[in-house]
Structure formats: structure tokens, C-alpha cells
Length: 296
Image 1: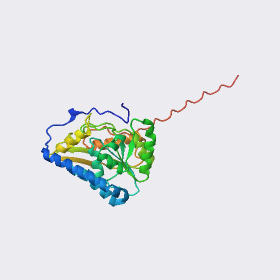
Image 2: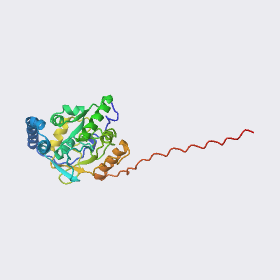
Image 3: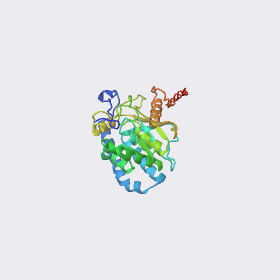
């Protein structure tokens, strides 16, 4: 089944770059053990996450997500606008290109926020628990009739001051290729009167080479992806924070989606046709009525 909210990426095993250094098997086991420790900590901290508010809660959530990255040996590097922090009472739509299950973990390690996630993510181990505790809004992509209500919930959340993370490509890509940003979620930003903050994500190795090894693509299982990530040595996840797109900058959701997509592609150094503001064609001037000839 394929539609606008269930697009299919052409990426598969053939997209995975070769030559990435790996760690020995004992180190991989230790990484999984460390991840299990973070999961246990998340369970124990769950009551605190529900009770705490403001900065103490943000620090705790950020610590949990950063702990997952560290347990898998992933180093986080933030580039661009360093002012990417929540402003109390001011919501925003945060969008990024989608490569891996690591994406949402990295975003929340920088700034905890709610997420628009596919329903299946809520059932995942580790990540499912954390996104549920984080107040995620779940989208049933197989039931398009539920889409308007989900977008209304998304707009209400941002209008109420929440940052909400969305991956508008609708599926994962390898990172060297990417999909188009679907416009539906951008309507929620327009309805909520909030800005859009694009983030550009890229994976590198310690020597600076770009790698697609962490990509979660094709028919691969989550467990297989976890094993591949745990085996990598010197993995760096770059998050480039792009300038904010202010409310009213775009005339409609499609133009807003194109603006965000262009910002991400520019941050990744890829060629993108500049976004042109679409102008409505002027209404045709009605032809003058023919003059009546007096009856003779």
C-alpha cells in the first residue's frame, strides 16, 4: 500500500557504503549492555519525567536520549544556529530529513520535544517507550480518514507552545538520496501560526567520510539495524540547525514545504532549484458589453 503518507523509498542494501571501520565483537556486546542500562534507567525515571516540569524535565529527557547515543558509540555534532532552544510558550514545527531511528534520538538529545510518529513506532523497544513518555502524536498512516484530526491535534499542540518534530519525507532514505517534503504537516504550522525550524542530518565516520551505514532502509528489521550501528567505529551524527522560517513567509503549505526542503538541501550542500513564490494569475478583465443601437 502506497500513498502520500506511506511513500516507498528506492533505497536498499545497494545504498550502503562500504569500508566503514568496525569494533570488535566484545565492544558490540558492551554497547548493547550499555543501551539496556539506559533503558532500565528510562523505566526508573519514567515517574520523574511525568512529574517534573520545565528545565529539570528537559535536562532529564536530554540525558536519557544522549545516553542512548553514547551507548552505541555515536558522537553528536551540532552545527549552524546555536539558538535552537525552546522558548517558553512558543511552539514550532521542527522538520528534518529522515535517515535512521537515530534521528529522533539525536533531535531530543539536543532539545526534547514531542513528535509526530507513525503508529508502529509506539510499539518499538526503547524508542517506543521514550516517544510515548514524550507526548508523541501518533499517525495511523493506513487510515487516511484520521489524518485531519491528527493534523488538528498537531496544530493545537504547537499553538499551545509545544515543539513538535516531524519527518515530512514520510519514510527513511539512505542519506545520499532524499525524498520530497510532504506538505500536510506544514498546514498544521500555518493553522497554528508557528514558525518552522528545518534540521539537516548527516552521518560521518571519524575521518570525515559520509556514510550510509546507519540508514534504516529497505525490508531490514530494527534488530538488524541496531546490530550494524553497534558495530560501527567512530560514527558521528551531524545536525545542522537551519534558520527559522517565520509564519507568513509562504503563501501556502506547499510553498512552506519547499522552503524547508530547500533549506535542508542547502545545508547538506546539494543543488536545489530555488523556491519561487507562486503568484496568482490576475483575473481576466471582462469584455465590454456591445453598445446597443437605437431602434430606427
